[in-house]
Amino acid sequence: MTACLDCAQTFDARGDWQTRCWRCWREQRENDRYTAGYDEGWQRGYSAGLLDAPVSLDPGLVADLIALCHPDRHPAERADLAHRATVQLLGVREQIQISRKDAA
Image 1 (cartoon, one colour):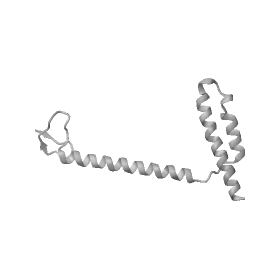
Image 2 (cartoon, helix red, strand yellow; image 1 turned 135 degrees about the vertical axis):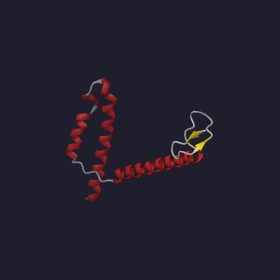
Image 3 (tube, helix red, strand yellow; image 1 turned 60 degrees about the horizontal axis):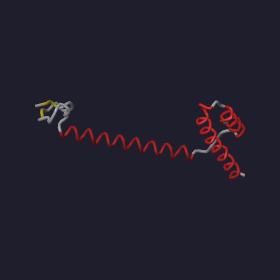
Image 4 (tube, helix red, strand yellow; image 1 turned 90 degrees about the vertical axis):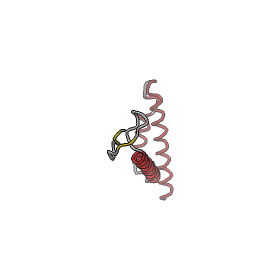
């Protein structure tokens, strides 16, 4: 007989790996699922909020950042990172241009 780690009641463990009784194991598993679901939902909502947030960067600053990040300004070992950063900044620049057109 083994004592459950959570409720301390004794139960017939099927091996050394079994440290919780069936009731406590199920409860822990449900808590883990709830937490994982909550975290996933929060992250999705946070990401959606970021995507919907207005871009408030100065267009001149974005142009400077693109110039600084451009792959031609970096050695080969940073070319991939520089390319990804530049692509993202070009997207930001496009969003700024679209939002400025919509505002006009």
